Image 1 (cartoon, each protein chain N blue to C red):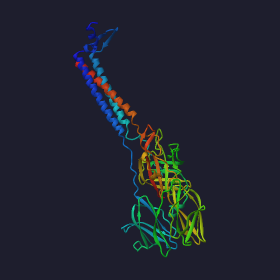
Image 2: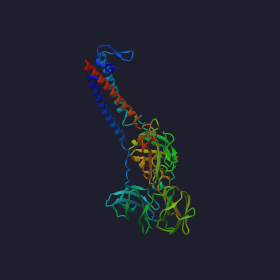
Image 3: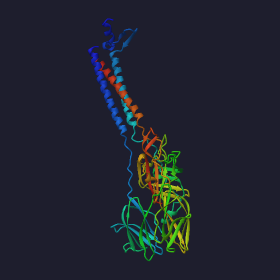
Image 4: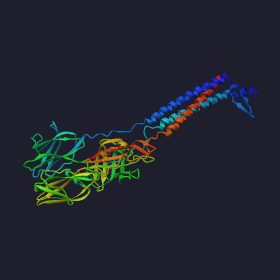
Length: 294
Length: 246
């Protein structure tokens, strides 16, 4: 081999080596880019609110307005007007924190002194019922903590006794006793019941009330025993409700027809780039050689 | 074997290039015609240009072939908000005891969604069933009915194998957008979007989506994030949280 041939070969090797090194570097960088795809995640926003509902469960009490203040504030955050006996508001979403609940006779100015007031500490994700209870001669505000969760596949139910017609009532569901001799102004804890249709009966010494309620798994209820006109009344409130059965994990709701497809196509293009660069290098070398030979 | 012969053998013909010359390949009855210098130069330039061209077009392909977002599809027609008999704002104590009929139709004007609602159950493995077709959404019948107390769950596909599904634009919803659900009795429940989130399926917020709440709420679910072609599955779920306003 002549000296010139060797020099040309060496040049060629060093060129090819450099080219290959550059290609490898580019491939490596692209590979790293591809694998470092952004990890899709959005942190679950922790709920910072709780729920509060307000009720008038004082038999014979006048209709009143209910005010809700953040503790230390004189601006009412919420006003529910015209709440008469037996009325229960829907749950109000409020930021976790301490609040003052005040009642005034319906139509009284907000600046007047409240008839009743009480404070409530609302925790995030929890639900509460603030109710006026007791006879109209001695009403008071009472806070009940409401249960939203249930055992798997079950419903839960509690009873509030707000009837003065019968100072004590016994509540049964299709013959099963839920509360025996429950005194006026008191409430039971939640009892776990199988879901289904139930014949609910509330009975005192002389009066009674019946209702047919459908209780669903994953749902919590409050039964309220109320005074009617010369009879008892039963009202079933839904406290909270979720799915009867919790599906496991995420949901498969896509087939990828609109998804980004990295990988095969990129490799094809990269191979094309490498091949093209090699061809160009060969052409360049050839050109150099023909020039040198000239 | 004389030492002179291998020297001749190894001498590449191009090293002694002169104007058109015939090289005799030893051992073969062949004569290779080496082209002239001018022609060689032209060919070299051609090869160089060809190589550069291939490199450039491949680079262009690489750049345009890795789009930052999927292909653009036709903008949604702006669906009018449904009208008709609107649900009367339920008085507070009736919300709790009202029997709400199952949902039949879903309209989301902001992203052009108009679909009837089928019913979804659970798969054998206990996951949320997906609608059989990608063009309709479904209500998970194990969840509360939309408009009743609790979190009602509606799922729909983001795409099919070839194009967008009914919830393709779900992730584009914003806080404050309206969602309309027509119930079996013809009444309309109106929901207000409170937030839109994307979660890795491995960190799915089961209790936030399916767990109990004391107010009427709605969750819309579809897929999102990165698609894993090996598993044929998206790695994330997009979830829209909404609350009943009327």
